Image (cartoon, rainbow, N blue to C red):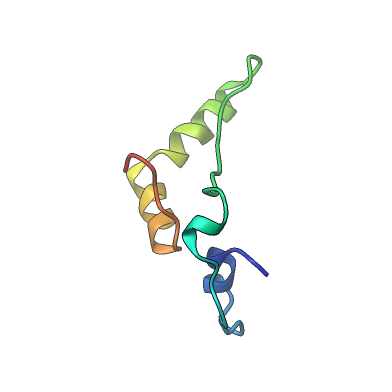
Length: 67
C-alpha cells in the first residue's frame, strides 16, 4: 500500500486497486515557517508556492489546494 503519487512516480509499479476517497481522511502535506525560521527557509517556502512548483506538484499527481 502506497500513496497514488508514489505509485505514479515509479514506472515498475502496477496499481491493482484504489481505496475509495471516503475511506480515509484527506492527505495533506502542510508547510510552515517556525518562529526562528531564517531567510533560506522563507525563500524555500516561497518557492513551494511559486507557479513553477505548483505546476510540478500538479504534474506529479498532487491536488494543489487553492490553486
